[in-house]
Length: 506
Image 1 (cartoon, rainbow, N blue to C red):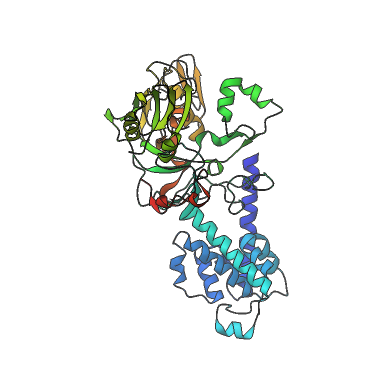
Image 2 (cartoon, rainbow, N blue to C red):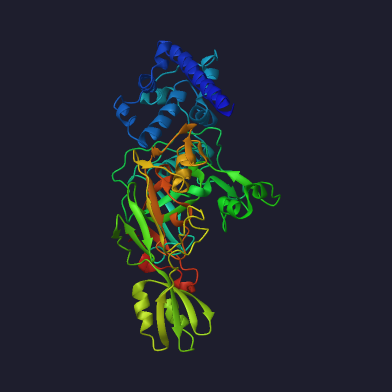
């Protein structure tokens, strides 16, 4: 019924728009049927507005075409004597209402080509200061929204999951064009807000209208080692009160679905793909790869993956009983915790570990690695048959577009969420048999590419080891460079990390 209502709404919008355009074309002496022909109707609007015909070329250029189309809608409204700010907003936002109203209004007439000097002389219109500001703000909002959606968007790093590659307080730009801009899947949203309004805490989008996943062509494909921003795959359902500490699915695994759903202290919301939390990680594997982790080292297709020189893990440091130098640790940007007398846990790179080993009061430095066959229930696929943990995991085959993977009851937990949730199928297990959409299945051919994302701070990162594969429709963009970096623990004059400004991300 929900889809039926949406389809009826879309049909009414299309009817309203084309009926109104038909009537307005007739007022200008054009045949009404021209309003029904895609692209050609835009050409007629160009002619009626007095804009050059070569603008038709711009109609086919992504991002630019939106700006051009908005400009034509405004010029088209002016050609019928609609000069008010509200009338221009109506022409852009609700033409399916504005055009029929103007088309059937006997007093609304076609005045001429509004973009020509002759028209401007004949129908002078002086904007007030308020109108000038309103137009400027509207243009700025539209332009900024298009840039954020299709070209470049600014992000901040709130956690230490990518240390030392990215630090808390880094501000970075993420390119949408490298992998191809994703067409907004939830097009009706408040500008500059992601999923929540900043003051009221209410939804910043309207999900009654949603679009299927589409992506414009990009320049490159995602490759291993890229630092990628994506929507959190388990963020489709969120408990607002716990989202910073535990996902909805973690709570369900711990407490049971009914207990979570019926908890009066929980506010549960569902979010569309493009309105889920943004995460940033490094791509370790792409579709078709065999991934395995052995003693914290990632292996791809049987070969040790190249580690970023800034990646880090936890090390246990034993001293002679004296304390570690906190100033030296701060200078090296090493976080630490004293676990017992003379025993510390430090998050650092292997290069930093070699430096710490040489300190006079340090007796031993060793990686804190969880042993093989020690199961962690927090680790994907959250099945007791898999004795996997964050340091010893797999092997698994990462799904890829058109890749056929054989299914059985053992590996079904690894692929079930991708098949069922991300690709929209119904998956059932009856005894030792698997059914997909009611049909017996021993294999599945995937429709999308998937990726395995991990943080460089391996022992302090919520990543694919905990929630599995990242589908291609969740990909936001490629992290390009840091434009600003603030150290909240720095002195007043040392808040800005000058050495990180305009630093590329690798």
